[in-house]
Image 1 (cartoon, rainbow, N blue to C red):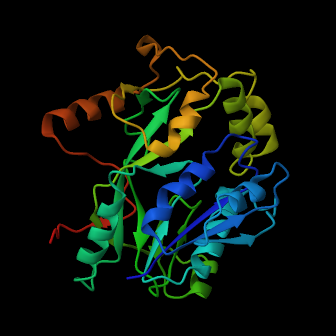
Image 2: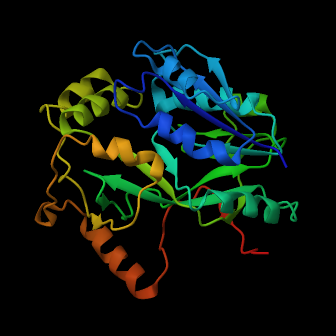
Length: 301
């Protein structure tokens, strides 16, 4: 079984993406990784080359900054890598996502299990969404708790919306013409994705948020939304303590942390609706009315 990973990055150092750590975390379990490197000016491409693995294949791209609606540019970059990958399984990892070294091999195990079933399209991964620092996670209804990150090729699977997940389409042409697509049938492999999108110095986090918001909103909306220079990590619904071990690849990055975050739960902005739903979920021990871009299949062996 040949496994191909794919990812994309542009100016990863400018906004402190752990893209090198992300790539290194998948290298032990893949036969190749396609890294789509956008037109960067901060040494991102050189850093990918410096990893020094023969498994890495770089594809150079140029971001069309006019493609701002709905985060379309991110789906385009994802599909560039997807279409270049040649494995029996395709594994997607984003530049702020890292696998834990103790769990990565389980992905291969579940790929082998899924290969027994022709009606299974891919694998689902649960998430740790780190927020504010490396000691807090956001476990609420406002973040995606699971996403598809691995799937079988040759099924007309392409990036859905802004590259958050994937769907099946009649053809690539129908995909480009706006077909809605079908949700993938997946197994939950149980391997956590460590997601570090909101782990930066609050000043840099504000700069990053302002830059990337332009891919969904107008300039006027951006200017009205960003009136301070510091990102307020306490402007959040709910955080929980994280007491586990981070991936070994993140140790150096975590050691360089140059800010202090103190969580203040009294500043919670959680809606009354979500408070009720989260309470019901806790009592019933299952999610309620959450968006799911997949069909979960209960096949385990």
